[in-house]
Length: 215
Image (cartoon, rainbow, N blue to C red; front, side, top):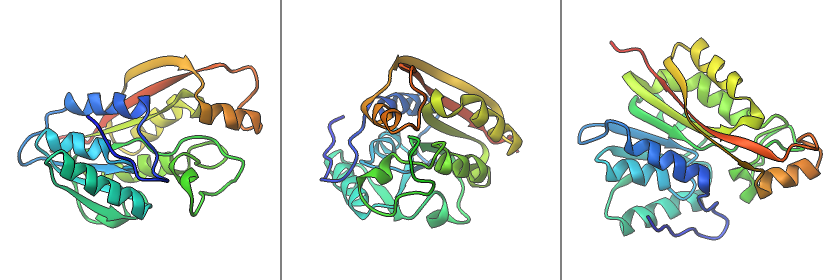
């Protein structure tokens, strides 16, 4: 899938392509509803739409949402776009599949950036500001038997994510895929800033899947 990315919109890298492959393994089709939170270029929302789902994409960036609309049109699918953070724009709605490649890079700043391209990757000192909100709020937005797919680095705590999802009432919580590799440029930059311990040269990129209990 070829995508356009407007200036200032984060282009998909390996973790997003991994998650796109995981979406194709889900039981999506006509009548199903999918939600992509922190959509960026729209890769995940468009992937769900090409599988037949009615797809919604959320992002804080207006430019990202324009990018989604352009890419959806290029690929002949419809994606509903909503601006906001995590689940605010879809209050009261539920979905068969929720996916997210959220910002998860540890940052020298404690809060989230309000503007600029770093909104696509910076997520507080521990890299979990958005991820924890997703884990806590996703159960209320899943239909019975619906699935949540998340991707992030092992450097910010795989077990912490698994435990948080279980405490939120989700079931069949597991690491669906794990790929080990060298730190990427963003993690290297934060390591140089002292946010990641020196001497760490590799990370696991993990896809975590969890389900809402069936009715």
